[in-house]
Length: 123
Image (cartoon, rainbow, N blue to C red; front, side):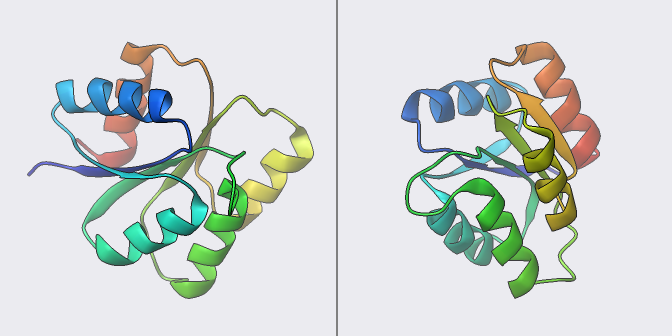
């Protein structure tokens, strides 16, 4: 079964890079341009295996999106990882408290990134 991954990032360049990397590895990719759009895509795509989310975005940031997603669907088991340039311990703690399963720092190494996604999705 093909695994579906949601990418939430305001940068089209980053989304394109992640999409190309994951598509080549056999994943189906859905894209969102900010946290608010990410919440809509979470509600539309109930078959997601993973969410990869940036932190700093307009309209709604990534951590706020995770907090709202967990409020709207507390029983959701879709793992969420942050892919960001941020590394502040307080922000990481807030994200983990909201339910984030991992923290990947940009720029990422494609091979290691795919391996992490495969592990998180059981692919």
